[in-house]
Image (tube, rainbow, N blue to C red; front, top):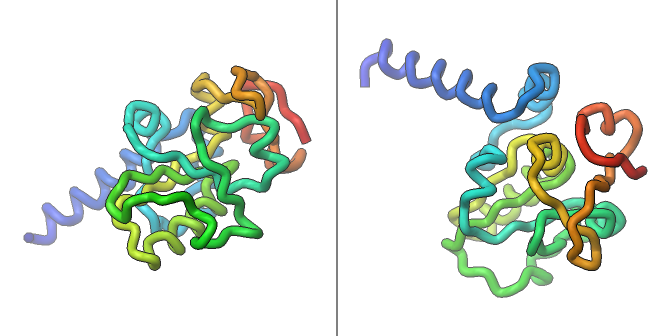
Amino acid sequence: MNKPILLTLLIMSFFSSFSQVESTAYNLMLKTLLNNSVTQIAVEKASDTRGIFLDARERKEFEVSHIKEAIWVGFDDFELANLPSIKKDEPIIIYCSVGYRSEKIGEKLQKAGYTNVFNLYGGIFEWINQNKQVVDNKNQPTKKIHAYSKTWGIWVSKGEKIY
């Protein structure tokens, strides 16, 4: 492939990811936080994708709200042995608050041979910011979102923040 075409593709890829979240400031923060070691998937595409959602947040965050049918895997206590039976080529969308913890868990999944792993770009914060549904620990729709901390909560523009 010649250099001008390659450069054009790289520039298009870079700028196309800017459209994945609504806030420019949030996008810039994500660009510095994430190292793109796991393929990113935008909220809109993830919401239309049939796959297994894994929640890499801590249990108390998950219990406030999570994406419907998501499986809690945690971050601090994550172990591959605790994963439910998931085929190595099955689509897996992993998320956390903003995408950092889920990227780290995604790296572990890839290292273990999972080949269809995606990191939800912007995490559950962007999911709720785009008015996608979350459910509580009784599987009932809720507007509550665990905002991790007041510092990280600035990235949540919709929903009811819980700390």
